[in-house]
Length: 507
Image (cartoon, rainbow, N blue to C red; front, side, top):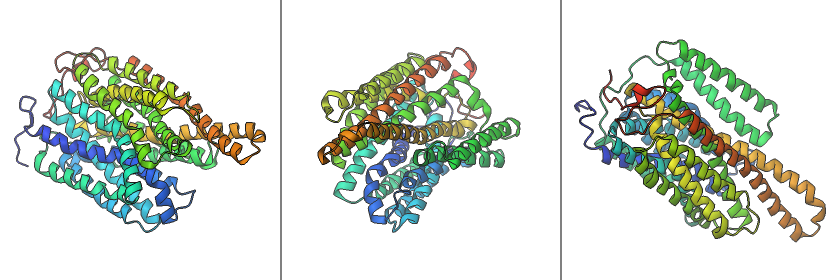
């Protein structure tokens, strides 16, 4: 890598080609969070995975990914982003091959955990490469528009692809499909991307920080997952939450004291970035819960096939891409991020509000389609400036950990969303059945009651999702006070000097 230093005057000539491979890798990681959801019933049957352990197919990935992201971001800063990115892709392909070839429960769970480990390496490296390669405001807006659309819409793409592969091929292809993605992205990255010089952070690795953050995040994610299956008052659930608080507080105290912290607190305490991490994490909570509910609603209540279910999510993808590439990209360099993020989250909340009206016989075209369009449009518009602002004005040596924090807020938000909203839905369903069981005397009435109780559970949880999205909008409006990301206009408020432009050569 004898490339001349990248400066803000001479942007990387191959940056647009690089974006193709970075976007491909991001799509693979994001769709992997949902693609397995549709394939899970078939895989469970084939491999004899017990009912109690089936959630671990999803959880093993989330735990490894969420727990190791900060470490992965630091490795990218230390070892070089290109090298970390390519290594993560090759490892992810190998883990996917192992999952596709799984012969039993243990092999499947091991493969999912390994996917999470390598995902935690490549995701922060991908976003931080983007942050240091695109420095001109208009180009940065376009690049992050594409990345934001993929980060938001990739989950829905996973549902479509998962449906196709499960129905027409075999659940194993939901794993094998990653291999060509990873190989193309790794080969492209190897030949096209050059390591931005001066962006390395060669300071010694903060081992206590790595241990405390990984254990703290794993305990947090596992606590929420455990709450979903065993209840909030379960002794292990409570222990996990207490342990996560203790470990994460210890982590923050350690980071404030050590000479070379894993997560420099300057990355978190800048109010705009803090606002992005918090509002994005909350918004993801509502999105992930919704993916799950709508998938079950369409398949179980409506009787849709896996492929039809996947296609039923298309309006959300269309809305997401439109919001991200047409609204977000065009306005990001003209208006402050909060004027895109807060209204974006509110539009998504209106879409979610429509879904509180779900009933057993609800019309897809009359309610579900417009609700999804609004959700996608709002989320796409909000995601775009959020992704860019999260790494805007960060010194190159911190780009990896700043990127990792975006991914961490998404992963932890996803795990919390699935567990929290599922628990709310389950208790509402149980209460509805108890109230109406006496009147369901015939098999037909019992079948109808089962469907009604499920829908009752979903709508109860969706009301919470509406509130969470409204909270995201308030946080974005209050915390984020920087000006338009046009590279010349200085920000108001905290960190104004940092926000003017992205430094690309280390000081």
